[in-house]
Amino acid sequence: MGCFLLTFRNIVSTVNLDCKLDLKQIALQARNAEYNPKRFAAVIMRIREPKTTALIFASGKMVCTGAKSEQQSKLAARKYARIIQKLGFPAKFKDFKIQNIVGSCDVKFPIRLEGLAYSHGAFSSQYEPELFPGLIYRMKQPKIVLLIFVSGKIVITGAKVRDETYTAFENIYPVLTEFRKIQQ
Image (cartoon, rainbow, N blue to C red; front, side, top):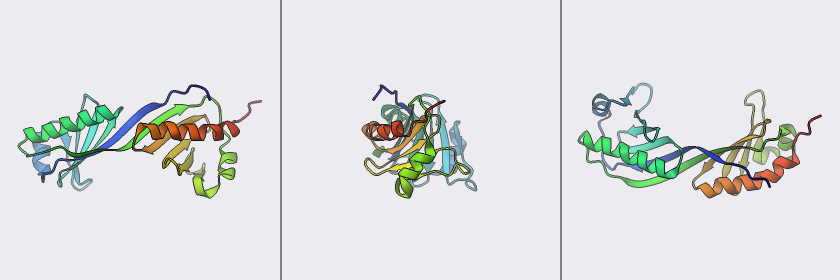
């Protein structure tokens, strides 16, 4: 297997601020926040460094998205918690957890998605090009979802730890080479 660069695109984490929050007050006082309760039941807050977005719920639960590494995700979540503290809420930082790691790579060869879908059946793959251009491959071990495109570009999602993305890629690579499109 060649050397492929897996790029981490998005890390999603959650944390419990362990206090009830007045979302209206947060939206009015924080300058980087928006709140439209008719559209979504959370304050959407953004920071520039690390470039992330947080969804902050009245329950004190928070979701942080957009970081490129686990460390960045934790740092960003801490920064959001600090902003909430500065607004006068007794926010803590409990149960921080990485929920999803999204990576991508390019195997640099086209893939016969129809053949792959046919041989890997309804259990693990879904390919409906009229609805979505990629093949959705659900791996059992590790429990990962891969989006495989005819171009050879792959998106790997659902990992809780980085190693799962590498394992998923190592598992799928022989399958991809088997369904490599031979160019005339």
